[in-house]
Every structure is written in structure tokens, then in C-alpha cells.
Image (tube, rainbow, N blue to C red):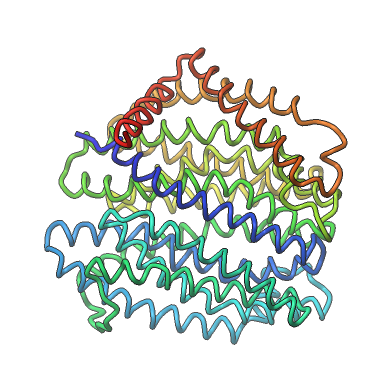
Length: 522
């Protein structure tokens, strides 16, 4: 029997923590927008941050979820708690050695790295600043790698809230550091870079008490020939290549945007941050919540349960993310205006960010879908298939970026990313369906289009409600917040009504879960 509802409950817990983190993330971005604006100055910070952030995806959160969790789950299930603790210690030692070396090399070769990812930066001063910021932020990689180790180990123990809250501590530390260092030094770029590294440390430190409480320990074990570590290595290598392919898409956008109008990189960053809100709250949460369950099913050969849980997870995910996609498109100007338009970030920057947000938003459903489909492959310890498909999507993204950046400017780069993600999800879904001999495909596709229709009607009403000169001006934050909040609340009920009208079965499932939660509380 599947664990669909347990998965959704775990995902809900993670979504709550992630929601808090994302809200704090927007506060962080508001602070950065206030001090850095959307100019060549801000471009230097976001280019520098993308370097350690790329490596974070490759060596930290991405690889941990794909390799560490399935292997640790298998070891814990078949060999017991002590074997799992030993494997965790070996992995901790390995991370300290390998990632520590990468941090040192990254700082040494920062000038070369910056020239490779931002060839459009011709100013010597701009290059110097970007190199300095890159060196300050490289230790962030080691801290978030250790944080990812804690997260993976705790997820195996079905502890989700504390790890999901860790990024909240990152955001809090960045906010405090940017404000404090800027006040004392008057150098917001330096403050932002220091804040990123300090925030990475807090992301790790916040999980340590729970990590130790669950029986794990930070002891050095140099047995790098351990069977579990070698198995993880075999899984990590193709996964790292796959994640590298995904991150190349972002770097392609950065490189090409460096040749466009000043501020284009910043527009893409802030619009990407906005779509990461639903992606992080729902897609990442569901992907991480479903992975341990699917891994248990795969380890015990319960393939029917694996199929059921996958279908349930992805249908529930579409039910939540499709209205998020349509809502962001309809309310793009009000959202960007409210969150970012202040100080150096003017209405022209709002328009530029909102423009690329339209195109990035079109890919939300496929980005979150990929998270769950890839988790299904990882649970079967197949990390090669997602890599091959991601490589196809990467090549398509590069081709489309070159074709679309001329007529659509930075919006073309965002659209290329979304179209490539559509292809990525579709190919993975088809392959998984064949591998599992069915995944409830007709039910998933039928539900998708019913939900999309309900979301489109909701978006039309939302867009009609929030129009006018108010959203061109800075200030009036409280008034705008009330208008936007009430509109979102109204549209939530409208969406539910449209889903009932179109016979969307996921609505009934959500209502059942809410009903059971209320009974539990009472």
C-alpha cells in the first residue's frame, strides 16, 4: 500500500518551513534591492553569487538528495542504525576534505572563473569587484554542503521541519549582516558578500542540535573505501553531471544577458527568485518528502506502491503549482512593485523584472514536475537517465536562447529556459511510464488540463482586479499589501469553485486532508 497521504503531510510540514524561508528570502531580496538597485553594481554581486551557488547545487543539496538519502535509507533499513551513523561520519569527513579543497581552489582561480561566466564585463573595476565578492563568498559552499549532509540524514529519520527551516536562518543572517555592515562601512556590496557566507554557516549550525539528538555525530572516519560511500560516488557522478547541465542553463542566461542592456542580469535574477517561491515551497518540498518513501518501496521491491505514490504526489503538485503559475503571470506588476520597487529599484526595473517573469512562470509546472519525476528515478538508484535527458534540454535551451534573445531580449532567455524544462519533464515522464509499466498517465494528464482551465479563469479575474496607476508608483506599501492579499484570498476561493465546477478530483483529496487535520486538532 502506498504512503501518499503521509508524503503529502511530510511535504506540508516542509512547505510551511519553506514558506517561512521564502518570505524571509523576499525580505532579503527587498533589502538587497534597496541597497544595490538594478544596475551594473548589482550585476557584479549576482554574477559572483552564482559561482558558489552553482557549486552548492552540484556538491551540496542536489547530490545529497539524489545519492545520500537513497543509500543511507538502504543502509539504515538493511544494516541498522549503527551502520547508518558510520556512513554519515565517513561522508562528513569526505565533504570536509573535497569541498574544502574546492573552496581553496575557487578563491585562487576566481579571476579566471569570473572572466568565463561574465565575458561581457569589460570594465576593469567591475571585474575586480566581482572577483573580490566571489572570494568572500566561496566558504559558503563548505557550510551549505555540511548543512545538506544534516538535512539528508534527518530526512531519512523523517525529520523534515528543522532542515527545511535551516534556510530561514540563512536569510535572517544575510538581512542582519547587510544592514549592519552597510551602516558601519557604507559598502553594501561587501556587506552582501559577507552576509552570504555568514548565512551559510547559520544554515548548518541551526541543524546541529537535532542532528546530534538523532544519534548522529561529527566524527572523522577516513574509510573512503567504504561500500556505501563508493555506491554514493557512483550515484553522485552522473547526478552531478545532470545538475551541472541544469546549472549551465542559468549560466548561459547570465553570459548572454551580460551582452544585453545593463540591469538585464538583475531582472532575470529577481524574476527567477519569484518563481522559486512556488517551486521551493511545493516542488522541492514534495520532491524531498517523496524520495525517502519511494526509496523504501524500491528497496523492498514494492513497485505498485511506488507507482501509486508517484502519481499521487505529482497530481497534488500540479493542483497547487498551476494556479501559482497563472497567478504570477496575472499579478506580475503588483507583486514586483510591492516587493522590490523602492530606493534604487525604480518602475523601469519593475517593468524589466515583470517582463521576464511572464516567461519564467510558464515553466513552473514542469520545473516542479521534474523534481518529483527525478526523485522516482533516484529512488531506483538510476541517476543516469535524468542526466541524459537534462543534456538534451540543455542543448535546446542554448539554441532557443540564441534565437530568442534578439527579438525578446532578456525575456527570450527566460522563455528558452521554460521551453527546455517542458521538454525535460515530458521526456522523463514518458521514460518513467515505460519503466514502471504505467504511472496513471491518463489520470495525471486529464487532471492537468482541468486544473489549468480553472487556473486560467482565476488569473483573468485577478488581472482585472489589480490595475491602475497605483502599481506604477513607489510607496503605499500597506495599501498595496492589503489590496494584493485580498485579491489572492478571493482568487483562492474562486479557484476552488472552478475546480469543483470542472470536476478536479484533487480538490476533494485536499478537503479530506484538511478535514482530518481539523479533527486531529480538535
